Amino acid sequence: MSRLAIIGAGTMGCGIAYVSLIAGHHVTISDVGHEALERAQANIRHTFGSGVKRGKITDQDRRNALERLDATEQLELAVAAANIVIEAAPERLDLKQHLFERIANAAPADALLGSNTSSLPIARIAAATNSPQRVVGMHFFNPVHAMKLVEIVRGEETADRSVEAAREFVESIGKTAIIVRDSPGFATSRLGIVLGLEAMRMLEQGVATAADIDRAMELGYNHPVGPLRLTDIVGLDVRLAVADHLHDSLGGDTYAAPNILRFLVAAGHLGKKTGRGFYDWPSDPG
Image (tube, rainbow, N blue to C red):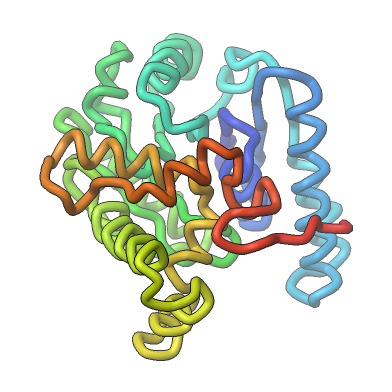
C-alpha cells in the first residue's frame, strides 16, 4: 500500500483518489479552502455509492476505502508522509511550478512527484524543484475510473527509477501505462486535440450537427465518445488552454483554436461542469 497525496481536489483529483482508494492505497487530498475539500469528499463518497449500486464494489469495500481517505488544506501536511505525490491543479505553468517547489521541500526525499498535466513541459515544472530526477508526468484521463490509460511522461532529468515507480503505481490501480518523451502535447493531447479542433471547425461551417459529428467517430471509427462530447467532459477551458499551448509551441494552423471554442469559453460555457458546452448537461441530482 502506498501513501498517496493528491494536490488539487477538482474532477481529476477526485477521480485519481477514487481509483487509488479502490486499489487499497491510503490517500490524502489537499486543496485551498474548506469548501473545496468538502465538495471533493462528497464527490468521492457519491462515486463510491454509485459503484455499490451498480454492483462494481461491495458496501464493505466502500467503507474500508473511505477509512483510508484524509483531507487537509495544508499542502505540507498532506505530503509529509507520502511516498507518491500527484499534482492535479489547473493547467497553469506558474501555478504548477509554485506547487512543486513547495511539494519538493516538504515531501520525503524519496517520494515520487507526479504531475497530471496534459500538455505542459515536465522539464519546466521539475525545474522549480531541487530534485528534478524524481518528477514525472502522470497524465490521467477523465473519467478516471473508466479510462484505462495513464500517460507517463519522462522529463529531461527524470530518473529511470522514477519512471518505473510511476509505472508500478499505474499498474497497481488497474491502468495501462505508455511512456512518452517530454514534448509539446506528449502523445495523447497532441493527437486528440487535432480531432477535437477539426470537429469544432466542422460544426462552425455547418457540416453537420454536434451529435452527428460525434456519431461519425463513434460508429464509423469505433470511438467510445465523440470529439465534441469528449471536449464537454474534459472542459472547454482545458481544451482551449491545451490548444493555445500547442499553437505557441508548434506553430502553424493545426492547433489554432476555432472561434466557436473561444466564444463558448468567454461566455462561461465550459461543458459538463457548467451544464452547457457543445451539449446541454442536466445537473446531477445525486
